[in-house]
Length: 404
Length: 119
Length: 85
Image: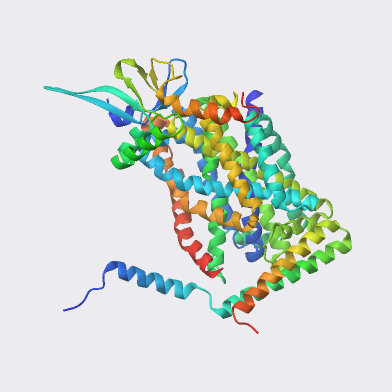
């Protein structure tokens, strides 16, 4: 019974990690600009992240190391320092985007501009980490995040042509606006395949003292949880493709994105959208800030815990405090949340191989994994997708910057 | 025993199970007519910096001595105090008060404790 | 004797060609600005339809219209900068 509860909660938590501001923004833009034609990228990203989340859990359960611990041990301090700096910058931008998502949700409901909500949101998130009520919050936001099912309900009510959706699942080349197409494609991949998720997940597995017995439930959680999140993201893509694409509406602001739910669901649509956006982003903000704090603490060997007062882990606590405070500044200054979101997702795609390649090496290392090493499918899928994403992003980002 | 594989960059844990740091450096003792022997392990950011570039290490040492607890955070643990090597490297001492904790304790006292609800 | 162009210079030339080829011409910029304008016009129409049905609260309508006005300003400024009439 207890394991069953653990698995369901694990699934719900995976949802929050999957659908957040990056997934919402990039899939909404993709649906608006290209209809269903980028659906295959969503599928590819889902497959990749299922493999990676499962690996994060398996690595921790078998090797008794978190991902970052194992990476420092296996690849040394130099690699840790070199790879952690770009990772930190990207995480910071992603964190600012998540705070922006919550702030925007509050703006939609109250009419008060998102810039005013940036610091209150950051303080609320900080208090929850400072006071260590993380278990309750994570489970709470994961359960409340089910409001994101509104996207699926909306998508169904709009009667999408199933053969168009199916056709979109086959990879295709763009007919027009090639730079925009590939830029969005890598942004979607960066939104779905987020390194902070793996670091956070493996830290949780170690904290919960997983062992070989958890491998089965971990596999189940990864597949079901991430697939559920993917269904939600497909809901967003579909709704955008049905509401915006035929009308020639490009998505430039979150205010427009809300219209797809009000179109399909009426008055409640606005509040459901704000709820889905705000709740998923809040949970994600916590995961990003803590994920990065875990990475630094584990990379440098500090003592860290959320189960005792912050004074017992001063450096760890100051990392997430500093990150969330400074990230809030970006939003308070009025930087456009949607633009920042899509760009930080594209940047995530660029830095992906810095995490996935050493990760794959670890997953095939007998010293860490013993008989539980990777099969060839997982290796090929992860290496292939992440390298492809990074290479395309390296070309697509400058093109988009130059053209925009 | 493979130094880089089994000792370097491993997590060091004290007598009570508290995390102390990573093995940032290993001090070898060179002997005449015998293979080199591990004299001590070293924890500290300067040891890491030295592995990158000696000038970086020198600069970092100056900076660390000039700020905060005025300590470069280097703790050298003689090999005799290393009790076990497995998932972690277990050492026979208490972390508190050692240079490895200098910056942690300084930041705790001067920054974290100033914020509400830190205890 | 054939003079060989050093690798670095070659890379710079290729980079410059890419940049020149990929930065948008004034016509493309005008077209993009025009598309942005039509996109927001369509947004406003959709908004009006929903408002007529009572599907959106007034304060949200104001938010969207404010965003539309800002976007219109940006797009017209871009068109002017690109040299459109």
